[in-house]
Length: 64
Ligand SMILES: [Zn+2]
Image 1 (cartoon, rainbow, N blue to C red):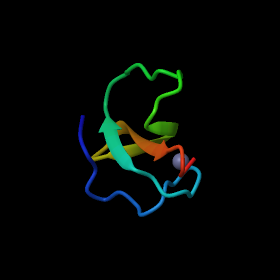
Image 2: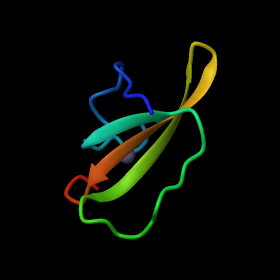
Image 3: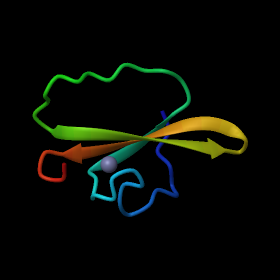
Image 4: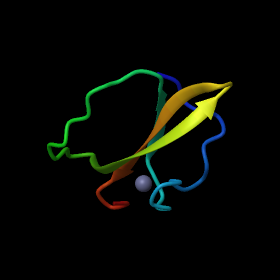
């Protein structure tokens, strides 16, 4: 997992503020069960140096 250094101030998917962002190159599992910390995760596909990545934007319940 990488943390992008060019992440925008707000989520590019829903335009809301977010708590954290992580960048992934491979598939992973996302639980849709309610968590205490996060109310929503948005997925933003990007290309970095010609390779596909997915940025995950994590919103808390207050931000979602
Ligand atoms: Zn979002």
